Every structure is written in C-alpha cells, then in structure tokens.
Length: 110
Image 1: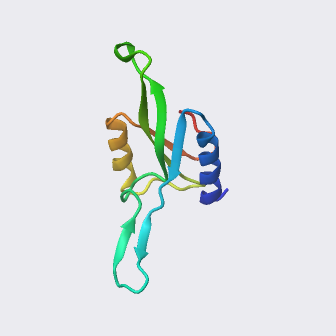
Image 2: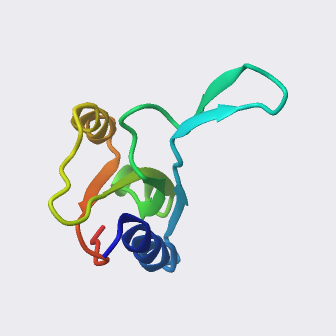
C-alpha cells in the first residue's frame, strides 16, 4: 500500500467516527507566482501527516462536559520509520495530553 492510499484509508476510517475530526497536514514549500518569495506550508517540521481532535467526556469534576483532545496520526508504510524530527514532535503532543498514533495499517485505535 502506498503512503497516499494508507493515509486516505486512515483519514476515512477515523474521520467517519462521530467523535473525531482529522485533516491532512501537507508539508512543503510554496513559491508565489511572479515572485521569488518562498514560504513553508504545513504545521511545522516533524508534525504528523494527519492532525485533528477527538471528543471525550472528562472526569467527575466536569461531568457531562466534552473536550476536544488533540490527535496526531503519522502514516508509515513498509519499512518506513519516524524521521529525526518526528519523535520530538509526537512526544510534545503526548506530554501536553494529546493522542499520538503511528499508523502502519488502516486500522487505528483511539
């Protein structure tokens, strides 16, 4: 399975849940037509392929209240591994209370 097809399948599977929203975090450089100006697009170097939020009902002190918990899903196929910037970014999301997943198949549990 290609990176693109796996990403599409994970996006569909998780995005079909009523408690989850995800968007593709396209990373790269963009050059404006007629200009020499180049700008970086996407969240930041090392950030996950899919970002969004997962809705949860939290503890007794907030009974019935929902929170949107940040969700980061990194897509990897075949023998792909995290690059040198990705572990630090994923650890930061985890330390701030977010959900982090590395998807090697279309089935991702939250």
